Picture 1 (tube, helix red, strand yellow):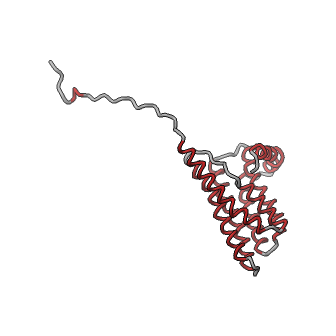
Picture 2: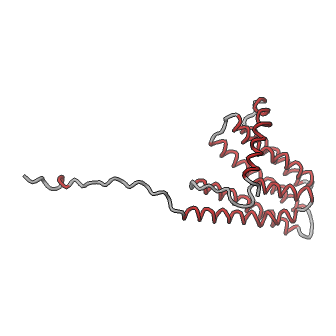
Picture 3: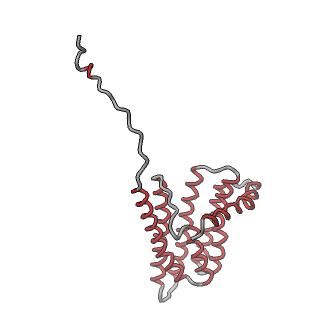
Length: 219
């Protein structure tokens, strides 16, 4: 949903404003990633306690750390394959922790639609993880896969709006449906990409049989 140009503008802003400050403080990208996870655990505890509106505002702050680590890595030339891997893993844990906080909250409440809300949270967890896994698996096959409606920034935005404005049923229903739709979109994208003709490989040089090794040369 967010355009590539918008995302690039936000990245540049982070690199020019926040990254230099973090670098002067001696903070590394992996430290930022871990701080973001700890903040997310705190947000989940707030949600589990029933303070959904406060949790929504805190989730905005925690979500910003998802931008800080990458911006810091690029600005300080500390990008690495492990850093990218570590960031992706922690992102999945962070998202799952938030949904776990919501599950604990709804499990303690006794509303008429509690069972529905719990089912929607569960479906949102599955959809979110499958969206991320589809991209990771596709990139493992050397297929770029950023297509689809609900990437991580869009999912966080929908969740924040639902928490802050009290529209959790609508937000969770949207996430439950469209995260799984996004996963299907990525499956279809990979299917189409895999069907495209690959570049022709250079033909292997012909191997001439050394017949003379089997038959003695004529004299």
